[in-house]
Amino acid sequence: MRPAMHECGMARHSGRMECVIYDRDSGRSDHVECELPEDACQSVLKRLRGLGEGEFAWVRLSDPSETELLQLAEELGLHPLAVEDALHGRQRPKRERFGDVLAVALKTLRYVEEGAAVETGDIMIFVGTRSVLTVCHGPTDPCTEAASRLNADPDMLRLGPWAVVHAVLDVAVDAYSDAARRVRATLNRLEDEVFSTDRVDHTGRIYSLKREVREFRDAVQPLVPVVQGLPGGPERHQPKIGPYIRDVADHLHRTDIEVRTLDELLDSVLGAQQARVGTWQNDDMRRISAWAAIFAVPTMVAGVYGMNFEHMPELGWSYGYPLAVGLMTLAAGALYRAFRRNGWL
Image (cartoon, rainbow, N blue to C red; front, side, top):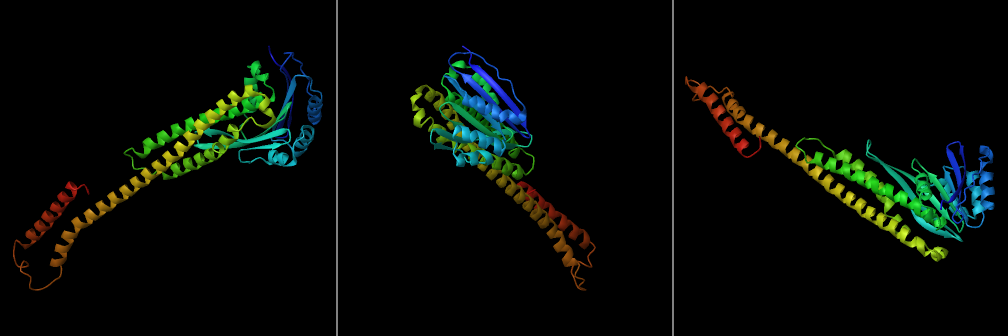
């Protein structure tokens, strides 16, 4: 049985609004024509007020204006503090209940290998008894993929609004896992370069990647207890959603462990890089010291014979000059051989 789905969408400035009405019982499909952009919010409100038995709504907002969000908040009974959080974004992952509405905030992210950067965004999910509102900020929106998964699985839609919550969380956590895999690959390449024979200092790259991993960790770690506490409150009358939420929580927990491991590995790689840089500096100092010692002997001998004293034993000897040059060469050669044997040159 295929779920009914009505869509009405619009593009307003940089934001976007979309409303999907699902019928989890009859399987009928009733398409609603989109109105003019300036009337789209009223069209969504009209559909929300006209929900039939067995229907629930999913309203999706991307970078919404304050007017759009306030109109929907009044219809859905959202708390002003929740509206403020959804409007400005940049919230730490959390879960809050406002009456019959549960608000869940989480980070969206993707890893860009070209710049070894983690791009993050924000999404707020408001779930009620017959509606779900998602408000997304940033370059990554998991709602499109979540909607595709729901449309392909009518059995999940029978679970109502919590099916939407599960789909959005599942897509977001899958993105976390993919990002962790890509970061791991980048770290492996960086580790190989650090321990290669090339004398290249990768400290800057390691610090940059570590900063991105810390941002990654700030998105994943606080979300673990949030997801583990779902569903809660009045939603406990739907026990069928529990195994799906626990599955997402398990995947999220594994990703959290992976991100912690990556952070620790970066500390180790950074320490190894700094140790290698110190070793290179010590090698350079040894070479400089060795060559200075080698040239010190000829300098000393030449300095002695360059003091211009009138009475020096070797000055009147025909073999004095060859002897002095030979002494300097022999002493310098002996020092060079000793330093080579000890690994200083």
